[in-house]
Image 1 (spheres, rainbow, N blue to C red):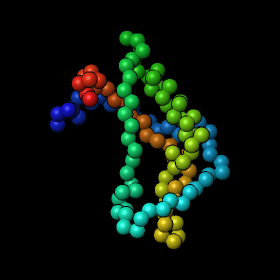
Image 2 (spheres, rainbow, N blue to C red):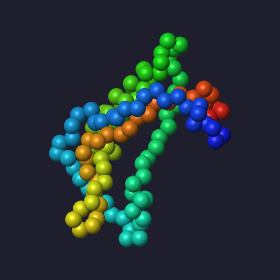
Image 3 (cartoon, rainbow, N blue to C red):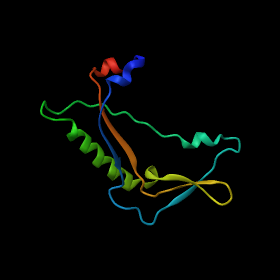
Image 4 (spheres, rainbow, N blue to C red):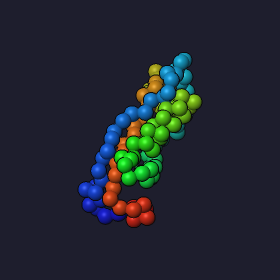
Length: 118
């Protein structure tokens, strides 16, 4: 895509997806990282792009987005660590704690075909 691709993006919605049911008890797991690992490396996010077409000409796209949000909420209930956050522990190490913070969902539209996008 060209450098002006951001001007083609039309953002439709921003929302958070949290687990379908609260996590109790809230598990936490210690993670190990090499001593020379740069601190910024653990502050990155995992990005996933889902492409879909409207189910009909009257559909705004919310049908598929709603299914996606519901499915993600159920998956986060089964795997609560995916909705967790990193935190420091007293000895300087790190752990990931399932705090039901959830994940961000951004719905956007671009006026090109999938083959043009890819």
